[in-house]
Length: 344
Image (cartoon, helix red, strand yellow):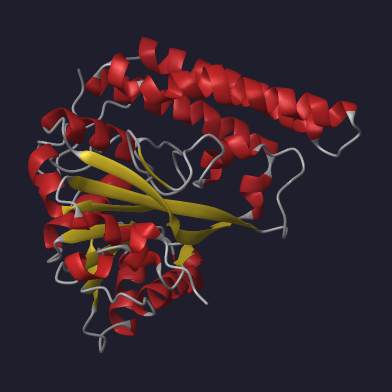
């Protein structure tokens, strides 16, 4: 006999009339099969999407191929990024074109479980909820997690990490590769700020969703932002991202990104969650690693060392980003789409 989770109460009844647009930003033909798999996972949802928008980031050949591939599919629309190169402008293009009441974002190298949209949109039965994020699980190219790779740093590969609250919980910000927003959120806070997020594989920056969520909470302090860990997607981690060199570069880039976020929204809001993470979550992770090493368990010393190195790299990136205020300046979300970042 199946036992219903109390969190299911009212979900289908109250959110069934809300239309959901799913936005998938793509940039390279190297991920062709991944893109098709991501779209297929959306089309197979138990709660159907109103539409799926594929936003192509300045790649004419990929744009043509996807347009041809989905020409006879009414619920899949292929668009060109109307703004500057990068993930943030691609998402803004999707937001502008979408017809849904809720906009969900899925990474182009991830597949969603069948109940993803139902779980992700259920909390919108509460009108105070303006954003809901889900749980992203890594699919390692090698078949399993590298022994040295700490779960506390799974955000390095775009996944749910140790330290996030379990179940359905209020959070400062959702994680961009598995997230949704009520359309009203963008009317209140504007779109994603360009210059912070990724530009394909060129700059492994991030935090664009963090900055947006902080602006959203500032615009409406009573807004509720949630993490729903039953809204699950599976995210591919290529072999190159299982290497310590990438781990270190990505942690450094996160520090740079956090410096940009604090420049935009202030250090109190920009680093609120990070203070708990660095003072409680990471020390506990180091202690677990050292304990495992003493007990002869594989990878314990490596994980403790990786946590220390990752924290140091992020701190270095933050320091460099703070000093170089004129570098990588983001474009304020209120500026018209398509303009370049302004220098100071």
